[in-house]
Structure formats: C-alpha cells, structure tokens
Length: 453
Ligand SMILES: [Zn+2]
Image (cartoon, rainbow, N blue to C red; front, side, top):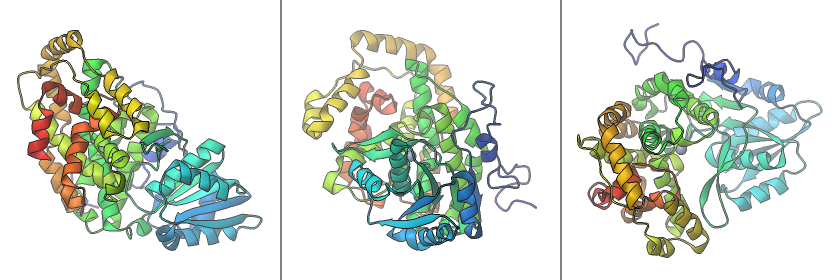
C-alpha cells in the first residue's frame, strides 16, 4: 500500500506494527551503535494499538501480577479510561482493584507523600493519565519498591519510557529525580485521539527539541568533553521524519498521526534511559521551561511542559542559527556570574543551588583564553557538524502551528517579560553547558532576548 504522506521511495519506520523497533529495544535485541553491543533496556513491555479495551486485564496481569491494585487517575482521565481499567481489574477473580481519583494533582513532594499514604494497602499501582499522573505514580512506587504500569491517555510528553520523574521540591524547584521503569506502558490510540488538542501539540513541542538539544550537547561534548552518545538519535531518526510529515494530521487528531507521535516519544524516552543521562533530549530549551516552572510562582500561566518546550525549542533554534551563521569562531570573555542578581531573583532555598551551578561552569580569564583557542581551532568542522543537526526555527514553527500549538510565549499564554527572564537566566539553574552560556559569555544574549523573545 502506498503511504499517503510520503513518497514511495521512503521506508515507513513503523513497518507492520506500532511497536516495531520499540519491541526490539525492549527485548534487548537492538544493537547500540555507540558500543556495538545490545542494549539492556529497563522497559520490557510497550503496547500501542488502536484499541486496547478488551485486553486491559490480560495486559496488566501479564507484566504486573498482584493481588491488589489501585488505579490512579484524575477527574478527566477517570472518565476516558480510569473507570474502565478499574472495572476490568476488579472483575479478575481473587483480585482487589480500587480507584483513586486525584483532584488537580501536582507532581510535587507533598502529593507524593499523600499518594503513598492513600495507596499503601495495594501491592501495585496502575496509572491512567499522562505527565503528572505518570510522574507521581512512577516516583512514589520507585521510592517504596512497588511496581507500577501506565495507561497513557495523551501523547503530551516523552516520560512514559523514561526512568526519571519530574518532581517539584519543597523549595519550589522543579527537579529531575531518579525513579524506575513502568512494568507496562499501554497506549490506546483511539482514546488518545480524544485528548485535548493542546496536549497533542505539547507532545510535538516536547519532541521538537531533538535538534536544539543535540546541538547544545554536541557543542558541550566537543568543547568541554561532556560524554556524548548517538544511540538516542539513531533510534528516532526515521520516526522524526515520519512524525513531522504528519504534523497537520496531528492538528486534526488523526489516529494514525497520533500513533507516530507516540512512537517518537517512546523511542526518545528509551534513548534517554539507555544513555543514562537526559542530555539527548534536555538542554537549553528544557532549562528555559524548567526556569518557568520553578520560578513563575503565582504567575505561572498553567502551560504544560511540552507547550513550553515547543516555544523554547524555537527560541533556541534561532539563537543557535545566529551563532552558527558566522564563519568566524565565537569568542568569549571570562564569565560574569551575577551573584547579586541570583540572590535577588530566587527564593532563598534555591539560591545556593543556582550559585553552585553558575560558578561550576564559569570560565576565568585563563580558561576563557583556552576556550577561545580551542573553538577557533575546531570551528570550521564543528560548525558544519552542528549545522547538519539543525532544523530551521521557521520549520519547527510551521510544524508546531500545524499541530494546533502556539509558537511564541504570548501565543501559549506566557507573559512576555517572564519569558524573556526565563531565556536570559535559565543558564543559572543547572551546570549544563548550552548555547545560552556561549551566547552570554560572547556578550550577545541580552540583545538576542530583546530582539527575538
Ligand atoms: Zn521534555
């Protein structure tokens, strides 16, 4: 059958199954191009199908047998799937299954404590939802040694197959915490196609950072000897093409397009978890999003991760383009750590962490001179390598817009001044080196923010 989105010469990465390639990784059969050995995957079972409803209990029992379950959903996901999952599990002889519906949950440490208490009599948790519900169940069970599985209800982020959880601490900082793998990741595409449009666009937004994260990470690798692996990118290469070809279909919540979006998110998650570091999918663009989540406080617009990352990926693509368009190598001055600014900008509990992160990657005069010498020497080759990884900001914008997502801070409802602060100061909150740091040390970041944000 000819593919309705692609020329005939193009090979569909999906093949005859939604989980082709994904199954290979989960079975420990995919050869890691960085090492030549098979990848040991933490995830053993990912099931994606148009419809899962008559297989719910069989899927769960197969990967996570237990005598008692709590099905955790929120008010929306309970109606779309949580109720059906609870009923299916409760119908299994000898099994106790109850439902817990969280009201407006936040993925923070208080909610984790509360979830642990409310579910303490169950042997295993079944999460029904997307970002927040998944993070809460993943982190809670990782800490107390229970198993969990997830029924994804929206293609809004790539955390279904990550072993980390985004959890906000008592000091308000949004952090990435070590957690564990879901025993089963179950995706019903027909149900996910009913998710609100902004959640679908958010999934695309979170996926658009491949190019910007890769450029930041490779730069850091070449200049500062940060470890770098290609596995995550090799895994998702063909699917990135397949997904972008369907961005307009995502705008119509086409079931098939949603399936491709899930594939790329699942593969990205697997790539990150096998790299053992989040760098493949989290660099400057994610820091901008984390800054908003950590410091917007009462002014947080209620945007979700993928909406923010979509916008910040476009910003980073513009910044990277500006730096990479110069044939002359960038040159930096010694880093000025704005200690007074950090002390005035952030709540007291966050100041030490930010000062440490900013100081750790600051260059003194001697280090700046060595950096300049090195980047001068590497630039012609490095520039070509980075340009080959890039996707133009206009292209990213067009795809995101086609999927129904906002492409600027204002379009998704983020206050313009807050967004400018996020871009300007995001480099202070993590010791990861990105083009935000390079631009700041070159002395061009402020002007860039004025002009483009
Ligand atoms: Zn993300």
